[in-house]
Image 1 (cartoon, helix red, strand yellow):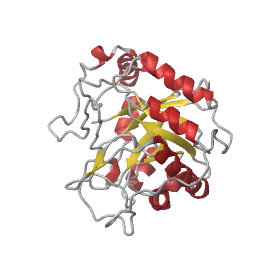
Image 2 (cartoon, helix red, strand yellow):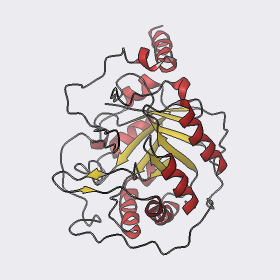
Image 3 (cartoon, rainbow, N blue to C red):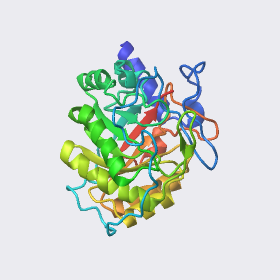
Image 4 (cartoon, rainbow, N blue to C red):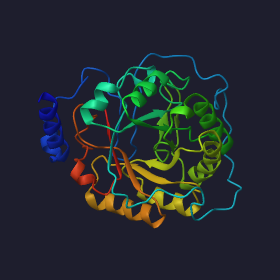
Length: 318
């Protein structure tokens, strides 16, 4: 009876308006905020946990050359494996940033709270590079045992060449490919990002991202051929960037993803129309409202009802 009551209560939270859902007490508010957002340049400090040594041989250790102009001709349509149906009736709920997951903590309580079928993690060279040496494997094993699929989003530095970005993806999949149901290529690459104590990396252009994606997607096709290849993983302001990147060419992309904080339903529909025009579903991989989510009043998360065009809706936890 308690389980039924809890399920009914949480369903009401998901479908409630954002204002109503925010009455839930958020966890760990006393801890440092792990997202830093700006009205123009949106930054997130995504990962918590202990510091550890960098990945041996990770691209960008030391001086990093400025990106050369991409030499490959543009590809105007995805030409990889058959895409997922953009109008699939399947609606998936996911959680991201499960506390401690990048250091191996068990995400099962959070998966159960949301009745989630997807766990999303972000592996990044920024902010201590948590999880990039395989520390998250116990978390992903626990998620799989709980019946959740795993999406691994891999971010890279904007100053890296396509070869360096692909090398970082290769290093991460050497650890995580056996657990990857989906691989997100990039994470808000169109925004500025900073290394702790070092200069901020400039935002990528759509052309630069497309060149990186083309190189990284080949790595995924080899290292994790059964994984869904997820394109862009952009911020709430990434529609023009996404449009141009797709026009420049994202071969092999099978889903288009962006983050829905504070965006109107019309923007979600614009992304949905863009995704379907390329034969892909829309994934909203951050921004679902619910218990314990990261929440900035300027960029509020969205109720599940507002994300009706999203085949996957993911709550980013605090």
